[in-house]
View (cartoon, rainbow, N blue to C red):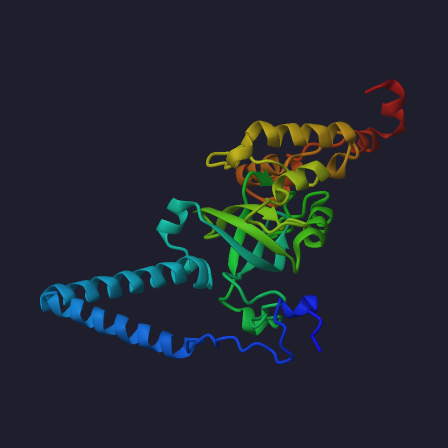
Amino acid sequence: MPTIPWPWRNGNTSNTPSDKPKLDVPNNKLNVKQDALALSVRLQAQLATIPLPLLALTAFTLGALTASTTAFLYARYGRRLRNSDWVTPDVFARRRWIRGVVTTVGDADNFRLYHTPAIGWAWPLKFRRVPSVNKDLKDQTLHIRIAGVDAPEGAHFGRPAQPYAAESLAFLRETILGKVVYCQLLRRDQYSRIVAHVTLAPRIFPNALASGKVLALEMLRAGWVTTYEQAGAEHGKWGKESFLQMEKEAKAARRGMWVKGVGAESPAEYKRRHAAAGSLEEAEAARPRTQAERSRKKGWFGRLLGW
């Protein structure tokens, strides 16, 4: 009885499946080992042709290059500046930017910064921490003076505080205390503080991709500082004009210390008055009086006659 040629049998009319030749599958692991061994033999043969002094010089050069690169990366990104004494002249010459956390705010235009270089200070790779105890922070912070602005003077050396000094200090504390800021180190001032441009941390993108708000301009916008215009003033890439314009807008809007108008004594005038006076009594006598104080001194009869 003839068999039916089913299509899936590809013309094979026999009832037994056709025997197909088996392909030899190479042993991949064995081939890889053989290739690696052959490569090693070739490399050894090539190395044998290189003179020994040249080989030693090449190894020394590569080692020195690796060591110097590692040292540079550590000094630039890994070494922490523990205090102002660690800031060398070359750091100022490069106007280096550093990152840190604000630990204390003493006056309305300066603060203490704990330098936090490289990685390890924030999640998800947080394995280092900023001390929170005063004794652990001793000699471990940089004293930063905010460049380009002057805040109302607090009570120092027996001198009374300027009006709005406390409010200005409270604004700065609320803005930066315990937060990450970025500082461009410029120079050392007469009080051994580090004068620096300060920016806040960006809200979304990392600082390498976007810059945060400029702290000095934010304080001027709020009306709690004036533009510093004395010798050695630093205004950075933003320029003195931007600082003065922000101060002018705050005065026009009567924000911060300008809430009662623009007749208030500036921090620079306050310091000049006390520097010129021989005593606190003389300084107080030379203080410019407000309209309300002049009216109280005249009395009701003088005010009536317009004296």
